[in-house]
Image (cartoon, rainbow, N blue to C red; front, side, top):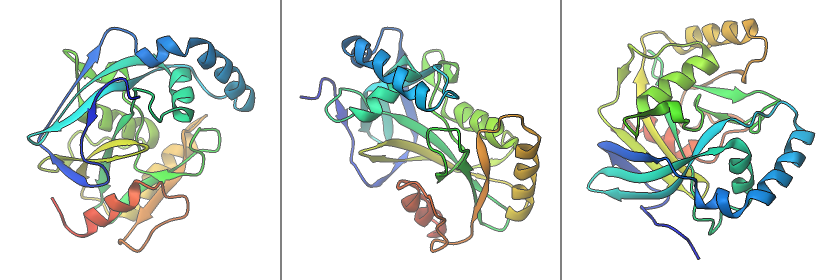
Length: 241
């Protein structure tokens, strides 16, 4: 039995005019009811991958789509809690939301990234992104663009602060989670952006990503593409907004 409410269409791209997801200062019920299992699972996870860090991320306890808005509630949890939730997500009373800056180069190609070998999603391809963290909230509400820009800068070295933003957000909710996305357009062609990202990765001591991945059309799907990415790629090259 699902403990709390998630009420939004699944497997369809939704136009989103505003995101009102509030950070609840209280603990997530999933974290409270699974403390021992979280600790035991984390011991196994770090034994397999010592590079993992038990930092703070957020998990949803509610999310709904109302009149073009995403409205919800989330709680800060340790990454160890998130890792157990990934294994027990069905009927857990928790869901995950994350954001994608859809990076559009001047030649209309998309620039994604391939995750580094030491990460949980090693080898997988998606737009530079990370879970929402408590620093991504302003006055208790999620600042989606702050999260997008922060994650792109941390993973690729690119600063999208001055990039042209799409008119609105969109969202795609699947069994694995809900991605909130928005186009960010820059003037440089994809090859130049990829060169800059590669130079940034080469200079990092412990880069999060393996390198950039250019997607030039809807049929140009790279190996390792995360399942949620195909609809986003098709949406972009269909010219939708």
